[in-house]
Length: 391
Image 1 (cartoon, rainbow, N blue to C red):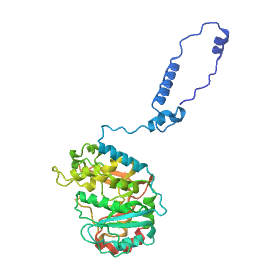
Image 2 (cartoon, helix red, strand yellow):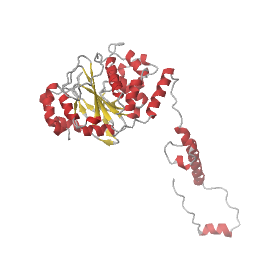
Image 3 (cartoon, rainbow, N blue to C red):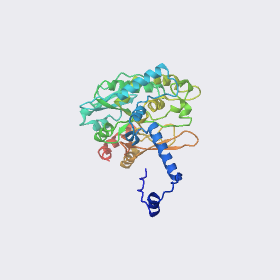
Image 4 (tube, rainbow, N blue to C red):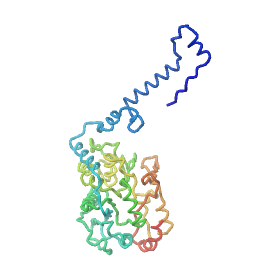
């Protein structure tokens, strides 16, 4: 707001004020009237519609600001009883402070059909940090044979998992439920049998523990492999505008893990109406359930990218897989230096969506783990581990 200039009377003004008895002119200059009008409009607007976070809240009565902050969320339509109950539960979970643990841990949850080919590498990764992690293994086809003591006795009750079906989400929820039984577990990482660590344990621990978001992938794909998979049977709870796509591999904080295991309303919609060969479309729950859920209930609480790297640059149905001959120091250095998450839409435009990886507001490398490594690459990864994990 501009500061008004002081009035300095001239000779003519003095004569008029003191030496003349003429009746002063009642007509004021136009600019004064305009200025007063603008100031009046501003004051009225500030009082009636005060910004939520601005100086207006302190210049005027704070009751207006408090009233806006306390306004409850007003949905665009009347909610069903189940939706109302679900939203109450989710809000209470988010409002509840995280459990304060003296020894906060990361739960590493492995989703695998059988034995884990990279246990020796994970053994090297875990060594010396026994009080800061836990391990859970869900094997869907056969009982694993473990070679690392960190994995012995860590198998949970498992059921068959079919690619692209809701059983994949069921396995994720089963792993989360088991990991939540340990109150010290504060971060929950989902990994496959083809995943490997890209950094040392200290780096990963600091990256996950010292931020307040979950690293859940989430983006809008308007093409046939995105919103083209949406079914109107999901209405009214899940609208097409809220439907999202993502990689299933996540790291989530404890509050979000509780929300996933507690959810029945939205999970049921995906179980019934997001499946292969339904209504002439293929919908895969593991690619849509979590990003859609968190886009609806806590969009600001997720990073919108996954900390697990996978290479889709070949444009095929499956991502690039790394064989032993592909494993070089340069490859691992390149992966660990990527600081932007890339998505490509499946419509005719093939739009490239770039998301900078911001960790507490700072741009940092995106990936802590890598996926789609062949078992034959183990020896090379062990050889390079001490070097590439210090990048």
